[in-house]
Amino acid sequence: MKKIIVLILALSIGLLFADNEIQISEIQTNIDEYDGQQVTIEGIVTIGTGVLHATQFKAYVEDNSGYGIEIFDYNSTAQYQTDFVPGTKVNVTGTVDNYVSTNGDATTEIKDFTYTVISTGNDVPFEEKTISQLLSYSADDISQLEGKRVAFEGTLSEDPYYAGGGYNVNVQNENGQSVTARVWDTTQIDVSSFGPGLPLKVYGVIGSYHQSIQIIPGYDSDLVILLTDPQIKSVIFTPNTPFIDQEITVRANVVDYDGTLESVKLFYKVQGDTDFTSIDMESGDYYQGIIPSMEHFTDNTNNPEDFIFYIEATDNDGNVSTSNNYLIEVVPYSPVITEMERVNTPNLNEPLEIRANITDIDGNVQSAEIHYSLDFSDKDNVVAMTQEDDSDYYNGSVPAQSAGTTVNISVYAVDDSGLVSVKSLDDSGNELTYTYPVLSQRALLKVNPKPFDPYHGEKIKIKFNSKEGDKVILRIYNSEGLLVYTPKNELIHYDVTATDPYSSYYEWNGKNKTGSLLPMGLYIVYLETDDVQTGNKKTAKAPIVIGTSLK
Image 1: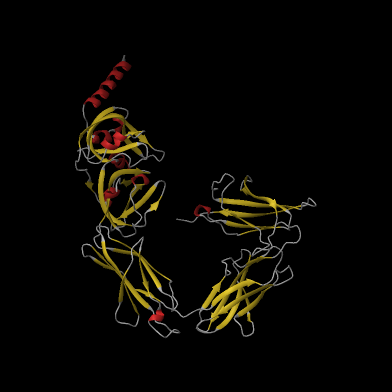
Image 2: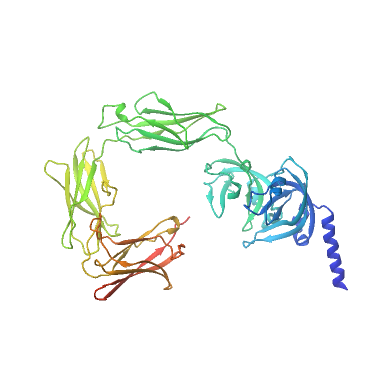
């Protein structure tokens, strides 16, 4: 009999909740009582459908109690898109559900609902808060206030950064206290122009992430930039240290957040001059202007002066912003290195001969050197180059190396002004390297000992060698000895027409045989070489460490 009475009482309470409109604050502050019950609420839509999820229906409604709640359906419809827009007043009857995520964050929602549109075009409610007030909320406060629309002001503490389906926009007050505005991809809010120090007013509903507060905006208008003057950002000029006959390209990101730009001008002068020259900068993805080369301003090519420039932007309201002054150091010519090449294809007991054309347009070459390293070593070895009689060609010899050793070449030149040029690529853009040939069956395996980060696109070069025609099998194992990838299983063939004919290597991207990135940790690369004529096998192994950069 007691069970029947309790059941009847529960049904009566549920019908009472459904028949009588209640305030959202009553539900949010007494969720244990209302969870699973049918209720009727009335309020104004603050975030409509199609904003917080691509396919599911998620909208927020707030009533005059100052509390908000999510209205949820697994499927969105065209009618939802029409009816649930900010400012629409709706009457909703449905079942309360206290949804708790794997992070322990609770969302109170009404599902399995019916609704009636009462009116449209109402003011969208919000309550002004400070960052310190928002941060004073406990986890219980956040759970109860989840869905309430607030507004707060501050400045960006850093660039917005992407994480798991959206951007975190961290806004701080003058004391360094920070609240995150969570901008989901589905809102299509553009934060690409935001940067540190940008003053911002944020509108959005209160949400929870690991029981900490975050504010969820829904529309571009929910992020209001509190600036009236044009902003001149990301000023760059190329080349950074131009020669006297090089013009200089100046670029900048110039925006006016509350209007349009009327003009963007580049002002420049030689450092010793009094007056600036101005030109209009051309617009596009950025603003760009060209400063003519120094030779237009001076005949003193051995000791040119420097340039000074700044940018001025004016908007449609007559507001003017001016950038800092920038100094461009103009330099005489450094030596020019061309025709850098390997002269011979040495065997094991022969030195490697290097030749290069080195000229200095405004002076003389004082010295030329070959700088070389072996395989993955950072050690810099130096040999002098000698000038061919009355010519611009210089020659040098790198000592003979052991089988399979790769020599990495750079040519250094210094002129009579003390200017240095360095070149490690030939005229075709190829690295100047040479690997000494392997003439007998070997299992030569070398790997860069430094960790690499495939999570940011890095690859690691795995060098392996044996003689021409040997079969090589390259396998990669994890620290538990499980095979994760076999990148090579083939006969060695050396292309004698290549720039580095005896080089044999594989660049690994940190992925397994299914194309998935492997977790951080220690891996072992294992090389097996087989002489196909004799069946003789040789092996070698080396460690590889997958890591990632610290944030």
